[in-house]
Length: 463
Image (cartoon, rainbow, N blue to C red; front, side):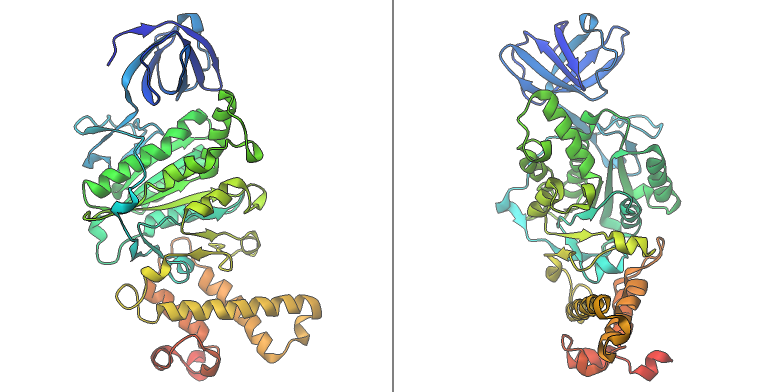
């Protein structure tokens, strides 16, 4: 750590500080700043040129008197102190305590930059993670090591859904080795309080590490938060052999902070003003999740992405879709009908679902039941479209049955209580209650054995 302080700040704008005439500075170096009132701020070098150094200041550059600002370059990257004591704690976006408890001092300092897992060292994602939410567990199953984003929009309950996943998620049979890292970027104080109270009241806070960045915190802090959170997750997974689920909300706030800083730096903008390196920057974050060969632990990632103007082709969800392995899409129409969680199953997809369900993971009939539900729901959507043209009273009896199935499906399978934690067996049994509304010959995606075990006749279903 250098003892030299420089008083050569020449400009400050938008959380960025320019210092002239400093040699031997590297990209990513940690910086400590002392202002004219003696207050300390933290920073990181984001550009080291021959004549000037550009620093992003995590606490912002407001009220800085440039002539009386002292800068010390610490010759080390930004770090997070990791130890088993992380669990149950609440931190800021740069890893400083936010729970009125002292900092962790008995751990190891690790750089937050990290790196994507070497593809040659990866193990294929497998093994079912139960979230307690039927539309995810039954139709878009999450497996260990997967990256499965939630695509939402303004006004939709993605924060409530994220909190429910944190409260309920578990690995069947390995609950003691499961941990959650929760990262919230640009959230209001009300949302931050909701998250803390939700986890505390449900008793899961002791198994959760929280990183919170408020909406009025400097945007540059949001650029560090995902990397800080993943550093904690990697430690819990690959040092302590835990299976870690990382839930991040909202990656759109992260991308907007990236755009703001990139603009202040003078980077050339690309689509909708975002920098051209948005894809590689998101990939750098998302690809830190996964499983490593010969390691017991794993990092599974569920990032929330709110789509500006409900546009799934917007650069943030669009690029996220290229990097991740599926998506859970929330529907404004279902939300307006009072359905929670408003998961639209038609565009939702988990590309790795087949590797985490079936006889040895959930139940033998699970893959076929999911296929049958999708097939019936697709036909129900066709019936809905037809009814909108000719009227529901003109539909055939078969099409009216599909319409009734869709209504019951949205109400009872998609819809569930915010505190309702369904096991995968309960989800599959609920699916069979819906399938039993159809005669056996109409269910072509399930086997005869499945029908013999689980299908009920109309009389039994009515009883």
